Image (cartoon, rainbow, N blue to C red; front, side, top):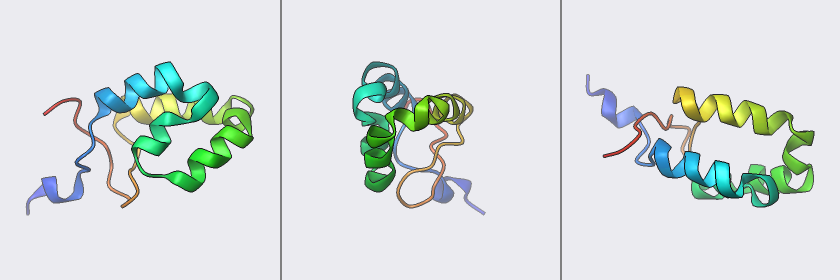
Length: 78
């Protein structure tokens, strides 16, 4: 069985960089992963009062963050 089918085409490195630079005011990492509804909620709730920010950090660096299709973002670079 080919496991790459279940892995997102998005990469961790750009997701992580967007998270570090633009996550607090804009939720840019969620927009990058095309998770628009949660990105807007991230902005409105100011990162879930910081809770989502911590959770997203852990999910991104462990390769557990998912894209809009529910596929995990597991690879750092191509």
